[in-house]
View 1 (cartoon, rainbow, N blue to C red):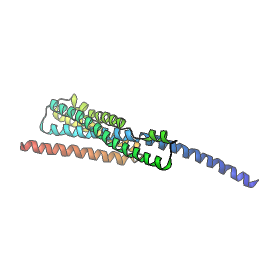
View 2 (view 1 turned 120 degrees about the horizontal axis):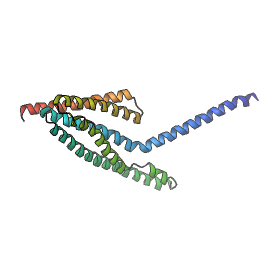
View 3 (view 1 turned 180 degrees about the vertical axis):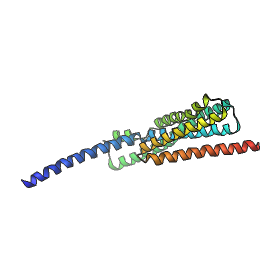
View 4 (view 1 turned 45 degrees about the vertical axis):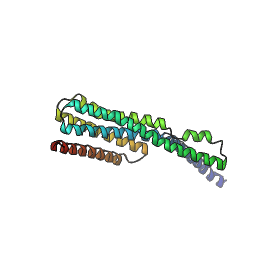
Length: 214
């Protein structure tokens, strides 16, 4: 009787642990299914933000005209979104070809026909990744564009663009950390420093080239 009374709580604990493991496994499964387009979206938004802001700051280093800055940012948005979409499509399609070929080899080896439907659901989607990347790039690029669009004063415009980009870098860094289950502070700091470094270098080199009239 004593043995049975001690075994009952252990059995309930084991059942609870089993349920938690099942929940965690389901969460991991859902996360892995979404990982392709989530990764593309976060990277696309960050690239759109940094590259477009750097272009606009570079032009702003030699030209105070707001129209020139906006046109440069818009061109960067369109060209960058197309480039990101094509690059992501080609990259993910290459990964898809590799995984499909591996599935065929395993199927010939083990004859696992019943798992075919589930395996197809886990395969990466090139079109989905490309669309997510292009859209996210455009969203990121809109931050400096909107920040500069309604400000005529040159110095104020540069300051507002820098402030808006700084805030967006912190948000994108934190979001990427959440999706990757990493430290939000460290990720935000890395993204912030990287974005600022890109803008400073672009601004400084463009200013140098423009002043030398090369």
